[in-house]
Amino acid sequence: MTARFNPRVLLFDMDGTLVDSTAVVERTWRDFAARHGLDAADILADSHGRRGGETVARHLPAGADVAAETARVDEQELRDLDGVVAIPGAAELLAGLPAGSWALVTSAGPELAARRMAAVGLPMPDVVVTGEDVRRGKPDPEGYLRAAAALGVPATEALIFEDAEAGIEAARAAGGRVVVVGSRTGPATSGLPRIADFTGVRADSAASGLTVELRAPADEEAARR
Image 1 (cartoon, rainbow, N blue to C red):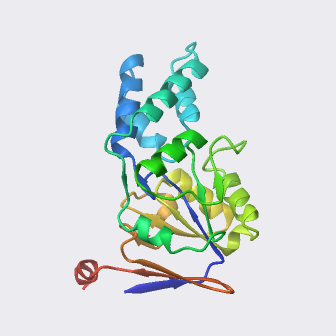
Image 2: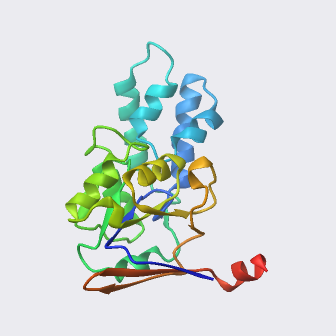
């Protein structure tokens, strides 16, 4: 089974999409929850795809120092790269994309984005929009709109790869075609194409843009029969 798209550009989220940082994210928020007597499961349920400071502000007890705690969370994530790996097929896909045809749109800060991409051997594109570059984080579409504009196209001509509910909402609100990466489900994922990873994704370039094929592995096709 193959799905084909003809976007002008590709836009990628980072954590959970190009980089599997699940182990670090869970350690960070479990430590945060333990420090403040909070339920880690509640925090993890809505932290994916959002800026860390926004998650801190939503869950930190009244009267606590949001700025100081956000800085502590950020520092922990910067130091901890244990277990961070590339999503399968991501390196091969990105290596074949022409310069100026793709961008990274992440809720992480610029230093964290650079460290995680470097740690797993993935290149940084010319256009990177981080959580520090936008006034409103995901699920607001600002990041994806800014990235598409920086590449010289409207977001409606982008194919966007996302894994988290907040990011998918942002991508859909921007007007791009969205592909869900991974197994996370929710209202925003309804009706969208889905891939487990990038091993079945092929992108070819032409003067008019890109041709992207999402090919299901043989075992997935067999499971559908």
